[in-house]
Length: 371
Ligand code: 2IP
Ligand code: CA
Ligand code: CA
Image (cartoon, rainbow, N blue to C red; front, side, top):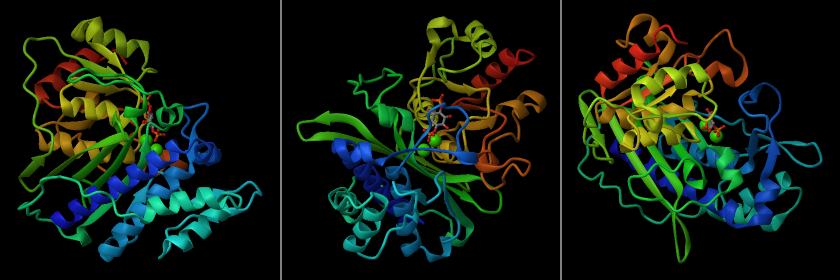
């Protein structure tokens, strides 16, 4: 299944191109923003936006994977629904068509007849991405397409994507918010057990050069004893003090409990669930702790694989506090049956993402009885 990995890297790069095109064309970007309503609303944000870019990217990934791996059709899931409402109140199902012209015609109906915007988007969807240097040659992955399913978050940290703050990133320093927090996340899991086995992360706005924004990509595979990650395992943190990255909206009780373990300057706040897990993967923080059910399967699946591949993982915080960390890794195949809408796929018990299980135990110890 190295072919699937190569395809996901390619399609994630295409997704990043679409995300960049939408931001580069300011009038296009304005056009694309619609507000979420109803049960799909992520309750966390007062203003939670659904952009056409999200929907288009998700459908493009679904289309391209389905063409090359027909066994996976019907098992490619994502955050977004492909229904989009245009200015006339008509509901249009966004799909990727066989040709650029057909896709442009369909998108024009969503964009209230704006054919310039529709053509720009369609070109990015149908364009082959620049070849990416991913060093997957010689990799043999013991998986079959009929065993696998996919979670897509076409753009994680949408609020940062929309706000569009440009930050100059410094090597080895965690920069808490800005365009670089927006990530394309594609995670593959086993249909039978929900175990996450292959993950691709694309960061479309990693740095800027003379010709505009450049992206970066990261990938990992973790299955049947095979553990490979494009990010080298960071050196273990010396000494007893940990660094933890948290959501800006984390509860005071969690901050208090962790500050005894981390010291206040080692508690860092950042945007984006995927970005916070990426920070743990890269060693910019030791753990990401989230006490609420405000992330979803599509947020954690891809980065979870990279953490597993370097010896870490992501556990359900509330289950781990109750019964210890063993057997509490998040799984991806079963909905929360008692919930409706997006919450069916929420990581309801919160989570801890970690590289080192001894550090995970310290975090659980510090939080026991406090939340
Ligand atoms: C969001 C996004 C938010 C995150 C939230 C996710 O996904 O990653 O940034 O909140 O949990 O569901 P926070 O930044 O407080 O961690 P999306 O942007 O795809 O809606
Ligand atoms: Ca998300
Ligand atoms: Ca999203």
